[in-house]
Image (cartoon, rainbow, N blue to C red; front, top):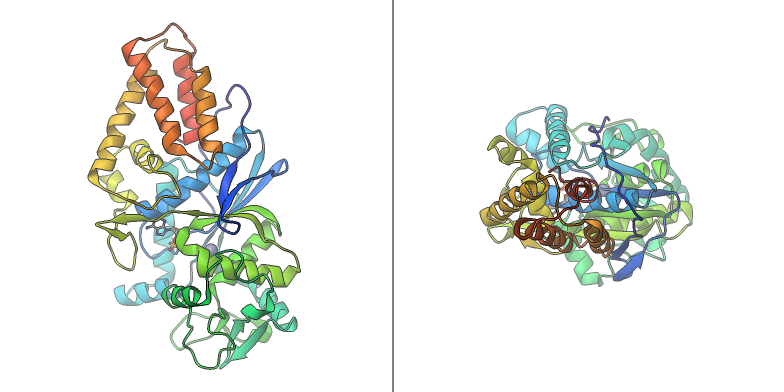
Length: 409
Ligand code: 5CA
Ligand code: ZN
């Protein structure tokens, strides 16, 4: 699949800082030390509805990860998937009487436009589940050979007990795992499973549903977790730097994915840090396609909201916090954007040398975007109140805000 166009990332004076970030697996901050090429996998959308602000907030967090690394003069190898065949997509297509392929294509195209408008850097590899199937089948076959998978009425399940490290991503107790498994696509109550938590690797073809040739697995379609594992191992290999997504992916998705990969390769861990963004709510409840309490990025754009203001609204919350989208959040961002634009539009201003260092310090410290915004606010306020004689400063601020925060002033 093609991704979307990259906006330029201006180079900044001085030296970027290494990223310290919260890792769900260890429950604390880790300082990542990627080589010259940092490797990141971020779970992509299931394209049955338009990009909402919860999605945008999560992708914003991982865009910041890339920007911190790029500022240290590293290259970034970024991979993202599109879950372009799965139950929720097929159910929505059925409900609306549309072709599931056309629905997925339409929503993926809109997602690309939203990401471009928000200046999110694109992945180098943007891979759909359907196009990954030829790589998924041999992995499931291999898991069977290893005795880590079993068949139940034609479907193939992964045995969580085959991974001695199962549970080390989310660190939940059995009861919590069972509850979340039922809520998030699992089938803990299906009779005949070895362990209620075992996730499906390959679903045998169902009447009226799309299916693919699975070699020795028979016709069917892939499970959700093995999709991301196949794509990540193919393009990044084991031991990559960051596995990312919203906090609702920690269990079961990232836990199961890590187990699949660890059993397949015999290596541990799959990722050096499992990074999870908080959930954005609307009217007191998590924004979700299934509940329908959504604010779409594309709707705001249609309403004439500047994408830079949307991005500033996302940045005004720490990525790990759960927070609520309100009109006020957007209003505050619109006001801040206008203040910043006025401040950088003058021919000179107060020195920006410490500002660049403050933004770097904030972002490298677990992506503290609100602290970075506060630093820019202080510079803009000084500009407003006292001005300054540094003719380079407005340009440095513009470039720093663009390179590190993805906001075009
Ligand atoms: N296709 C799978 C991942 S392989 C999936 O979870 N798709 S999704 O469309 O449901 O979500 C895409 C990303 O947005 C995930 O990282 C998810 O955690 C995140 N996300 C979904 N809802 C919210 C929300 N309300 N707030 C923050 N992030 C969210
Ligand atoms: Zn995923």
